[in-house]
Image (cartoon, rainbow, N blue to C red; front, side, top):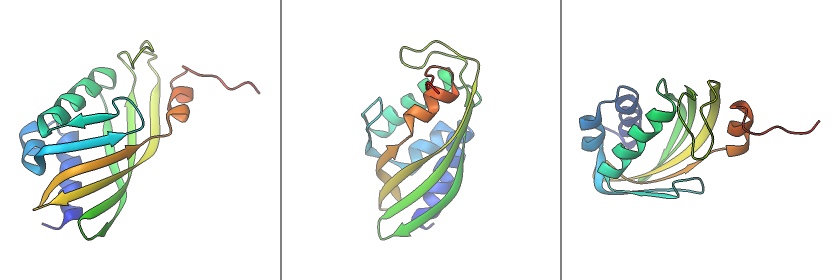
Length: 137
């Protein structure tokens, strides 16, 4: 399986809540970096725990691979996120509103497993869509 195929399989397993498959595709010593909370997630078990917590906020969460580009051990991916905020998001109460947004994720793979990722979202866009922030016009 190519690195791009591993990333696609990881997204599919995450969408299916197939945590055993996620654990098989992600290295035990995995690290996820982001400027958003949580800023760092460590280990494949920590990643599964992060995704389960995310499902408490967005139970109908779905991520769709828009495109990916592979160069060596790196895969850059544009991913579409959609989900309804039915649970709290950090300090924000459930809004019942749907979030639909793209984000960028970069994966580093070692020996066919995801070893590291960098994830960046447009948080302001998300807060506006969910009704937690309003721009004065």
